[in-house]
Length: 50
Image (cartoon, rainbow, N blue to C red; front, side, top):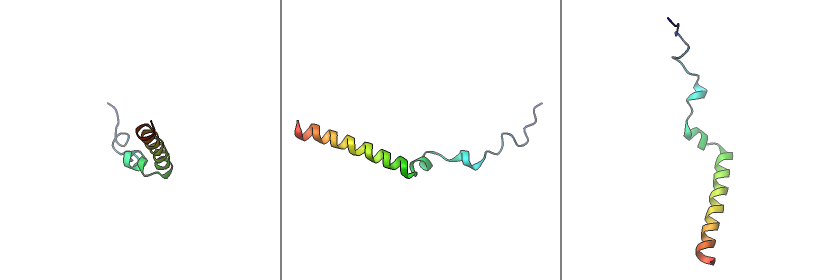
């Protein structure tokens, strides 16, 4: 028999963070905003200038 008293039952609180914690980080949001602005500028250029 395997002894699983505290090996699998309790995970550290650092591993329970999900996607919302990742999206709350400022560098990721800045990166996503820059990519979004570039896509918006490219789509507006295609719609209005070409």
